[in-house]
Length: 234
Image (tube, rainbow, N blue to C red):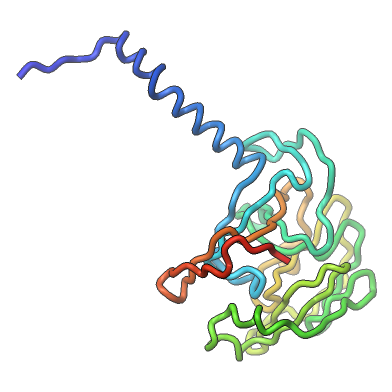
């Protein structure tokens, strides 16, 4: 059997016609994900009941600024995170991407007293949480938690606590340094956040998480949670 070895010219032609367009397309796709929009899979429950394990959240990377693709260098900036925003950022502790809520802006004085948040000395208001939101959690898990709606800067959102857990329910007061933001998880008793690793530098913030685009139930054979698809985050 005769084996035909492609000539150098044919290989170059194949690369130009077939491989090069695919490489360009892949580069453009990853550049867009890096600088414009992306999604973030959430493997832990630190943002429950707002975000559940298995949710895939949409991240708007143009919410605050434009970065050089594949870097944290800013080309332009038109806004900053606000209290209540859910943001994706690189952890100061280990560089892992995390999803948390902004509770403190530069210059804010943040304090937590028995899981009640105080911002600049003023207690944040709390109210009951709708049963519809609580029902998103497995029924066997619900009795272990306490739920509330936290009204942070006219930005109401769910929070929960777990009395059986040993947690940092009292913290501070601390003043957020210039150029940094204080992050907390909505699952207040089970979240590794700024109470432990400190405030987060502005340049570490990737973008704002705005919606759940898909959701798989880790506790039920990874079946889709259809009711959570394409739902806005509070």
